[in-house]
Length: 114
Image 1: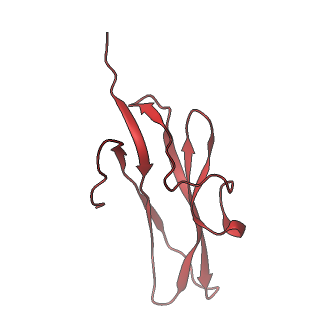
Image 2 (image 1 turned 30 degrees about the vertical axis):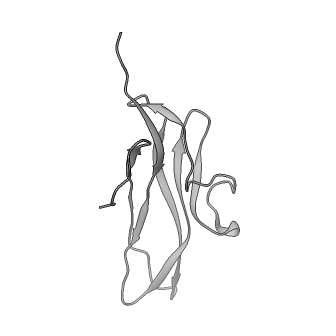
């Protein structure tokens, strides 16, 4: 009988970094990650107020426990992320956004993020 390792996910920590210029000022209105699990495939909000949310208001990512998933089973998938920004003045532009994440066992401590 083959033993399958099970991973209990307590969270994926995301950090979004923005390119900044001395000629422009911009910031974040909202951010969300797109997660697919056995129950749904939707955006889970990581920041933003009610008017700017990307996913449904009930889908909050922070401290969400997505349950137990078998390693390499494809039952929990991080599909990507979305970011809503604002800029001043109108001639400025957001040049990039990056998403960094980590996954750790429920029984382990997340440690420092690098």
